[in-house]
Length: 331
Image (cartoon, helix red, strand yellow):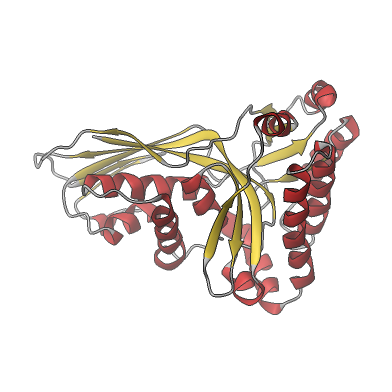
């Protein structure tokens, strides 16, 4: 039996510049962090005693003879990509709901690749896991996804990802001393809106406008805010300044597509600001999921009371990335 544990992530700045349609022309960068909410993947070799060869358990149960018969796109693609030809069962357990803007699908893919490599007796780096997850999602599944989720979930920590025009992706950890990191985390509040969405439904307009060049100025601004955010966090400036940058980024991101926000989400956001939040954003592609806010510690209770119909999710940063929790080889 094999068990892997892979964090989901929260993005702060630069989202939208991690799509090849943009960074292949202009370069790009993001600032984000893995958090201590996880995707657990359990992989177990299966005896040749059943009338199926692959068993996959997630929100539904699939029992099939061949991997190509699977409906789950990531499991099907990962099994084929790594040429897994033995009987196998795969179970997924997640700490948070899927399709909510925290990169859970990429966390799943990274964790599954990690487990399947272990099944083959292969040790792989976090960099390789991220690269393979991008390939599986973009080239095999043909999903409209960027590249920040796979790298942040694989590597863990607070990271600045830099996307070069030649396709090279550089992972740059952002070193903060312990007191500053704690202060930063204490200013963050995460709320679940209860709205789930399919990212590609939100991204169609944004990607088309990226190709047309009509939002290049906005995306360049989002990329520039990453440098300002890192400078702020690495200094002695109040964390409130970072919150103001997050607010700037949210105002800009809302221009990328009409589907990124909606009146309900805008209402939550404005109410949080009136209650004391300095800035925030809707995580992921948009349309639903989790709202993240930067809130002074003395205003946390006020924001919590104002958004009492939403569920707050307490979290901390994960500094490990995808890890192999358990490995018991079987013949």
